[in-house]
Length: 429
View 1: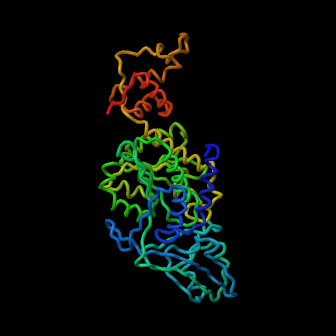
View 2: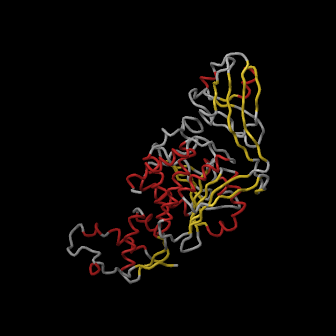
């Protein structure tokens, strides 16, 4: 795939995933993972039985829904799950009855401040049923009897499903990527993350890797908790940096949310990349967390995980509504989200402590690294080379040197490689 078409390819993949109804369990999650598995054949699917204990949580019964609607007093279908899978409150119990409007209103949800949007609501851990609709439609409902129908099912012998791929590297130390697959049809908040992560996984498969990569597609919150309950000991000893991939598809902003520790390698790399590529980015603290960083950075888990996003969840008006549709994301937006995360990975791969191998300044000219004709601009042309050498004392990483001399790390990577080829730099273990 060419870089020119990358954004279009990611967008086309997002279009495939968008219509599927997903929740924290069920066939929609499996269908989503099946499509991702077509792109990443090495993706392994795991089923965790309902009732499984995971730290302080329990895997809930599996929930699936086939159909749902509301018929008005004239028999007209006014709310239809087939038109928008946001119309039904997630994990709604089955229902088939006729209710007067005043009773139905207790089960309806809308947004007066966004009258043209269908809200997204869930009730995972308390049994109820409900419908979501546009507020301007709700205001037009007439008195009378309304038939409400939800064809849903709970399976106590069901399971929670997640996908995992481990890409081995030269070392066992790991880079961790996590994204979630548990929301219905929303584009930036849901689909952009797994779409971009799928393409990152395929790019990584084609690369020579120093680090091992652990990449997971999980239901948010309960999926992260379940995954950690199974893998925490290994992850705690191996993960050197990680990123949560969510909300990486729109064109409005770039955003960063820190880990709880604020100064992990993931934090430093993310900030370095964004400062150089998108200096207008918005910076958030761990106090602004709402997603799976709550689990990965929780006390006792303490994984070095930060979030790099476009418009952060909860900050844009379309968030958790039907307005977060495919028109909100774009090929350019998705490619931008991909490229920032890709650049973070490239910096992590190249980051190592470096030490110059000669005393005093090496003679760059005889190695073809310094202009043979000295002019007043000669120093400018080799400033980055000389500054890199000046700080390569064996105690600082390439990232630390890049920060100190205020140069993008990716500009120093080929310089460092050429100096190593000339025997002037060596990596310090």
